[in-house]
Length: 366
Image (cartoon, rainbow, N blue to C red; front, side, top):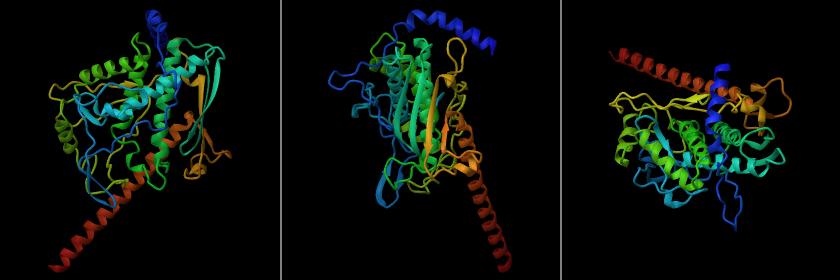
């Protein structure tokens, strides 16, 4: 830990001239400081030619390509043409998730700049699985610290979205979103967006221009494929392994694998055989420390007042109030893993019984 603190301090000294010029987004005069929605851009379902329940004839393939994606716009614009792109070192990347988390990082940083003199702030962030509140104390933080803190909070909120949708939260009433919870590409795309947002806030360029350029650089460095056809083929290569077309959206059984390893670093899932140069996956790390080595967790608290869709007393038997913070995510993630394992075991048991019955029937016929 001492080594980490020393390295962090040395890096901060090197970057101080740059950080002093860190820029938040420039908001329009007629709409100052717009707050992001919970979901800014429509994100994508993982898979190709996916059918929708009760809507025959429609098949979804939500991919895009380097050539199609446009410039970045704070809070989104149709010209962005978002979708999923496969990269040989970063796996599948959902551009909507990436852009959303970059914008949330920028928004939270702008709030910190605005309230720097006060030193603290409390914010109500709406409802998602229950009421969400944010409190932070930035009185002793540098600009670089605030950028990293904004990134950490934005990433925590993205993890919360995955948790909340697993336990029944949805944007459209009565339309479950569990089918996309912890989708293979989501956590990595979210953290990549946070990383890009933090870099853009340290750029001398205007925010949107900086994000556009950094996205292009990352897609190049991650060896993103050049066409939608290649992304389509990469998805087909893992059909019936990571996802299935045998189920219709929004069935939670569309995804056969999910990414629950979301802290403290993320390693992307790469399609076997699609990395001919044998290059290592590009890992990303969640921001953790200030430039002096203090845990960022000490400077904020995300509080969630959970609704009754969560098995709260099972997870937290010693608590009376249905409130948790970001420090309780491990227990929630463990509950998700437990439920997934139970379903997997039930499926395996049914298959074993079916196989046994088929063998018995075959013997009887003989």
